Image 1 (cartoon, rainbow, N blue to C red):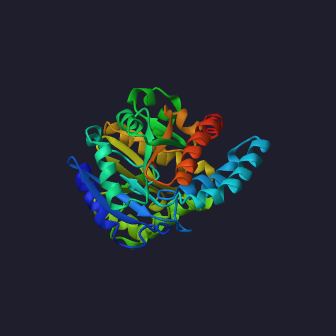
Image 2 (image 1 turned 90 degrees about the vertical axis):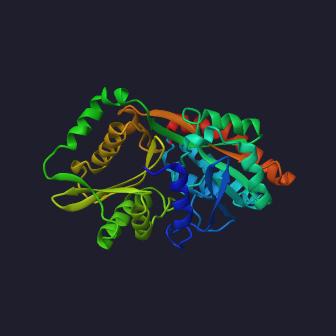
Image 3 (image 1 turned 60 degrees about the horizontal axis):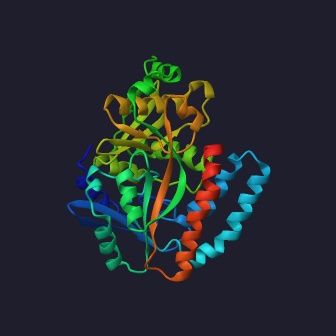
Length: 359
């Protein structure tokens, strides 16, 4: 994997190209503080923005897509009504007038080891000098992997906003001791099946990879997920920011797994498969077996994001509550009140729902 600062410099350079992510309208800039390069997204409200830069999309529109997973009909209808009740107060508070620091525009952002030494207050002051009207946010923090950053954020008066529950693979032995993990691993050795790194200069492969991702994350889950273009998959693979593997059955590309990592941590922001294939082909199991095996063989911590909680826990994943931390002390009283109310709401209402229904 690339060294963290080099990775982020390349990321900022590539993201100046328009349309790489189809539902993203934001400016990508970079700060440097204490030798750490921190990319940042800077935007205001845009109706097509995905949740990686838009709290409004995540809290209101994506949440509505998730509500069918809530088993209690009463709770489901209550939460659906609550999203409509909160939508306009949130818009008036301009929640999407936002800088997200260290934003890699993926479902999970990663923090390099250098962040343990970074002065968050100094970075915050640097960001606010440039965009004094924007709230600041740090996404994808959990107490298991980021206790030092969370401690700094709390000390500097950042507000915690609970975002979701994620699943971590941190212990090779804990994974390999699970019968499900060993059974999945055997799928990787079956004849007529193979994983191959895709060619970023092959337009047909890149278009097929985009199609497979869309079948899973957009058509099956939510149109508010990140919409990677084939061009994104190509240029990020060619630049070394993304390792893109294809799952082939008798030379037919049926699945894709894109790996992104910083330092000793890995995630798979690009996963997709032919959802029209028979379930007995076990395409999702094969993809996850490959991703987990890749991480374990390379001694990497794996953050497998949210979703499929039962599947991941049966293979040794550890659940962790994920937070975004926001800094709003410089904003007006109404905006501060809305953000503080949101922080309280996620702790008192959303967290119990997350833990009960494992969203």
